[in-house]
Image 1 (tube, rainbow, N blue to C red):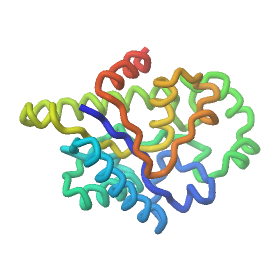
Image 2: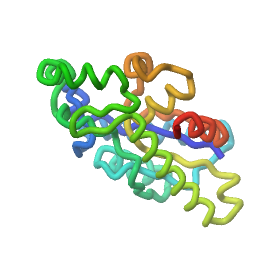
Image 3: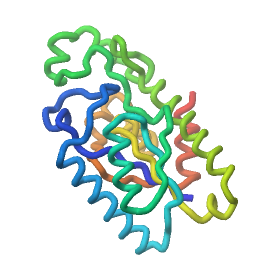
Length: 210
């Protein structure tokens, strides 16, 4: 099984470079167009490789759900909401630009940047907490797939719609980047699908859950 993991489409806060985190912001018009483009890309790619999807799993946040629902409608696939796939919470920094946040919470951000994996922005989450809940959600997805017919699980891939920081953490572990500078080195685009083979994601899980 291959796991396609995509970030949601664009929002107004993305355009304004405001920190979204757990704040529930909907797609903008361009984000809706991006979701349709993601559908077409997946349809074309799956056809070329003679693969198919069985299900779409999504973060409960509006921007992810709206992306998933558009893709699901276009590809005629069920969409299932899974708690734990949400974006990282950035606490007191949400709604601000990074420049504004660094001016207002310079000491707090300096302390967070010293050990992003285990430290939190006030009111937010650490990278480790995000990884823990993502893989708890992934375990639930695996359980749901195991309850389906065995041939479905073996022959069909799945799509997960989630968020930038979540995908950045997975790619950082996959590519061996330090969490200290991964936010700069790993760019995650809106409505772009990244894929992981099942054993590859298990290897990332082993690195993630410490």
